[in-house]
Image 1 (cartoon, rainbow, N blue to C red):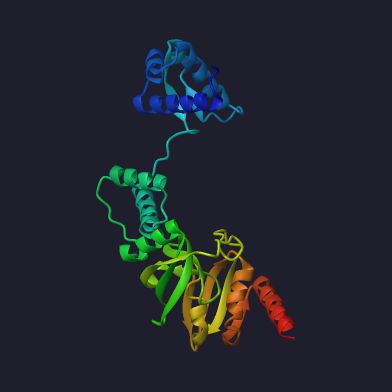
Image 2 (image 1 turned 120 degrees about the vertical axis):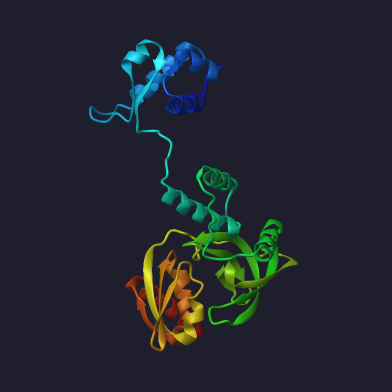
Length: 302
């Protein structure tokens, strides 16, 4: 059976990594290790050599010609497909980000494996706490509800220590700017919401099945379109405090909230619910969407 191109590519990258780790390596040793002939090893090295030379001044992968003639693979340069090397600072930062995702239950299995390897590679044990403390009694019931497609009743405490009970269709746990969030449909608000996990005081999994599917059109894309600044009276702060990545500063009798906007319609709808408290909204792109939705409401009301 003819060899698949993907199989050969994996072997070629494996040869490159093997030589990088072990130094000068005879073709015969490579052939035995990868289960191919010496002629195949020679062909693979030739392919790596040729593929790395798109121009006269760029040689990311280079082998010793003299060693090659002696049937030995000896790397002179490997800038093209070298393994990623992290400084201690970079490694700790990456451990912190992955740990936060793990605490939120949003880390896939591959990410868990990377985290374990990073911790093992660091010379000293590193304990990283995420920006949020998400206890198991919060995270695990939400994960159970999502696995079983069941509603969840959550007790939510906002930034002003006001406690509300909400029934939600839980969809996804995500980490944005170091904070863990629950993406859900809130029955109380009758709209999609993103709730910070560290502000969820209690979770109860209900028997009823979810009815509202996840949405990609109401603020759930993680790619920001622009950055917004909203000045609002303190009494309207609650509408903005759970925006992903929001930063809120006091401004006399008001607060100024700055956050990334992935979906202008979603944010405008949230602002419309506290319209009497708004003082200033930027940029114009968000103002225009707010005006459009306000006109629609007025049209419906006659």
